[in-house]
Every structure is written in C-alpha cells, then in structure tokens.
Image 1 (cartoon, rainbow, N blue to C red):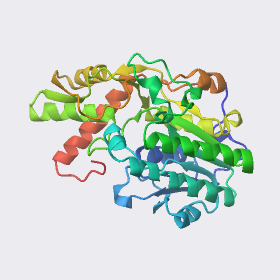
Image 2 (image 1 turned 90 degrees about the vertical axis):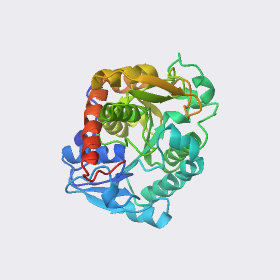
Image 3 (image 1 turned 45 degrees about the horizontal axis):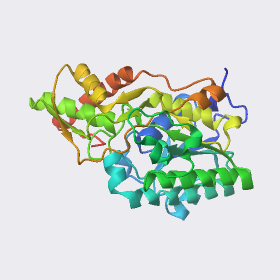
Image 4 (image 1 turned 60 degrees about the horizontal axis):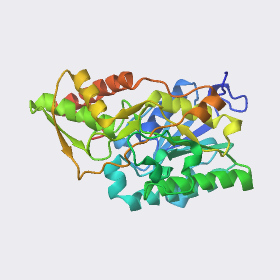
Length: 347
C-alpha cells in the first residue's frame, strides 16, 4: 500500500512551514529531525524548556523557547504554519504521572490554545499526540491483557490526570473537524522509547530506567536492581523511528481525519522479561528486589493494531530486542559522558 506522507503530499510544499510543539522533548525533537531529513526547509520548533535543555537541536530549524499554555504564545507560534504537530505536554513515566496529576491536567491549556490558534491562522492540518492512558483502566487490570482497540476508550475511565487530559483534548480535535472543518489527526501512543529520550531524573519510562539501572549496577559493581511492582506488569513498547513515521502517515491519511488510532507495537513484554533482556545486552546478571509500593501503573496494556493495519497496511515493527539494544548503547554512552564530567542534557 502506497501511503501518503508529508514528502509525497501534493498539497504540501517543501518550503511550507511546519510547526512542532514540544520539540525540545524526545518525540518532538525526533520528529523535527525526521522532517528535516525529508527535505522540509522551514520548521519552527517550540518548547517551554530553555534551549540548552532541549533533547535535540536540529541545524537549520527555527527554535523558540516559550510556554504554549499561554494563549499569546500559542497565537505567535502558529503564524504562517501549514501543519501543526502538538507533542507538547507535561509528562513522564508512571512515577511522574501518578505524582503530578495537576501538571498533567494543565496540558489541556496547550491543546486548547494551540488548536484554536491553528484554526484561526488557517493551518491545513493539526496533529494531537494522545496516549494509551486514555483507555478505560478497568480493562487493564490483568497482565495477560487483551489488546486495547480504539473503541475501548469508552465508557470513559481514563488514567487519572494524564489520561483524562488526553481524552478531552481528543474531543477538541474531533469537534474542530466536525464544526469548523480543520483536518485533525489523533494518535494514541503506547510507550515510546529509543535514543535521545529521558533516561534519568524521574520522568523516564521503563525501558530507559531499566537500561540505566543495569548500566549503573555494572559500573558500581553492586549487582542488584530494584524493580517497581512485582515485575509481572506487561506493556508494549514502540521504537522512536516507528513512532515518527507513524505520525507522518496518520497525519496525511484522509480516512483518519478526527479518528483516534493506536500507534504502538503489538509485541507484549513483561517487566521481568525487559530486565532479562537488558541484563543480556549488558552481559550481567543482577539480584532482583521488588518495590511493591512504587508506582506501577495498570497491570497490563497492549496495542490492538487491527485498525492501523486495515487503514495503512502498516504497524510499528521494530523488534523490542533490537530497539532496546540501540537504546542501551546510547544510554551507556550518555552515562559515561556524565561520569567523565561532560555536559549532558536530559538527566
């Protein structure tokens, strides 16, 4: 199936302005790099973090540090933009999401201001990054989970804070299409990981956190690891390259306008198996301790990819073992750079 992407969309020129919100973060920064590599010459990257703290800065891109939860900034950001990608949100792994629900909820301001500003500025398309946290949590209480399909978001019982923000923002995107004709795209991400992501400091997700713990254990000679929960929790993890390519395809598929769709791997991994893989990559075996009081999220969550395969004839397909090996190598490099006193961005 020959799916349309930005580079092959006849209505989009290589010098049309693309705005990426949240571009100082992991996925946003990777998306900016992806579009630059596709030959787009005018990309505006916006994030509230100070520029030196951005995960990636791409040459030839207009980078602006400003908070898009403020209306005036959202209005400024979209000036002249043909396409708007909203990846801006206060978020992190389960430790962050469970402790800072208000911050997660306040991301609703970003989407509210940005979509209205994009509509008023005459943008052609608008992308919103949603999350599997929008799904009904009652369906996620068993590690041997059935994969979540798009309709499972309703009746609504989303993850407190973060999940509810995603669900209401999805609704904004659907209504802007229904009432005002703005072409919106909505992808529900399932645990994105890879190089250039958060790996330390409290916002990192499980693959990066486990890699870092294994690297630390090897380095310090203290061969033990603390795992949040009982290790039986299951998740699917999507490699970053699959994620950005998926965003591009979803944004440029007219069958998916204002239609939430899963963007995730269907390969289910238990946390214990993740630890075993990281140990194998690191060439070490660690004594495991389980912290049953730590944030652990839902018991199981997986992506049902029936719909994306049906519409795009594609699904994220980087095997977890391959993606984790690349991620481990990158974090190991960052870890040794930090140890050597070099400045690294995201820890």
